[in-house]
Length: 342
Image (cartoon, rainbow, N blue to C red):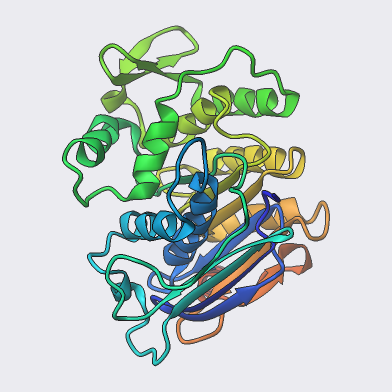
C-alpha cells in the first residue's frame, strides 16, 4: 500500500472541531500558537499511520479496531477514549485518512471506554516504520521510558516516546549504503561534531566527538542529543522511503545554525528520497527557513496554519508566508525596531 498520507479528515478530535486537507506534500509544516492543537494533530496523524504499520505485522492477529484502540489510548494517555471527543460536540469523534488507494478510518462517541466504534482498513498493513520525535529529548530518559512501559506499564511517557526508544535500541546496520541517507548522516555528524553511541551491556548512551573524546550523555547538550537520534535512525535502517517522519517543535533546544542544518537534512531525505515529513513549530525562524527551501520548487513545502477559533488554513510556502499570529508578531516587532532606529 502507499506510504504517503494523501488526505485527512478530522471531526470533533479534541480541540480540533473540524479539519480536512488533501494538499499534503513531502514536507508539511504545522504552525500556530500554544493551545491551537498542533501536537494533537501531529499525534492524530502518527497514531493512524502507526496503527496501519502494526496491523497484521508478522504473526499478529489483532483486529484493526484493537490496534487503533490501543495506539490511541497509549499515544494520548486517556483513561477513556471518549475523553478525546470535543467537549461541546453533539456528534462523536471521527478520523478518515487516505494513503494512495488505501484508507483507514474510525469513529467513537463520548461514551466510548476502551474500544473505537466502526473502523475502515485495507486488507493488509502499511510497509515501513514511521517515527515521532518529541519536543523533549529522549536519550537521557531512555531506560526510564522503557521501564515505565515494559515493566511498570503506566502512563507517563506516551507511545511517541516508547516507539522512538524501541527504534533507537536497534543496532546500526553495516549494509546501509543508500547515498542520500549516507549524505544525510554526514550532515548530522557535521552538525553535532561527532556521534552518539549505545552500550547494549550497560544500556547507556554516550557522545563521542570527532577528536574521539567520549562523554556521558548527561554532559551532552540537548541540541546534540536531539539531532543525534536522526543519525541512529538512519544508521540502523529504521527509517526508509516507506517511513513518515513526525517532528514536534523542531526548534526546541537548537540554536539557529543547527536548525538550518537540520532542516537542510530534512529537505534532503524528503525531496530527494521521497520520505514524507510533518513538522510542528511556533518559530518564525523555522517558517522562514522552510520558505527558502520551498522557493526552489512549488509544492515541496505545505503549511497548515492554525489559529484559535478559526478553521486551519493550508498554504504553499512557495507562494509566501501564510496568515498566522506568529508571523504577524514577528513582523510587528521588526517594524517597531525600524521605527525606533529611524
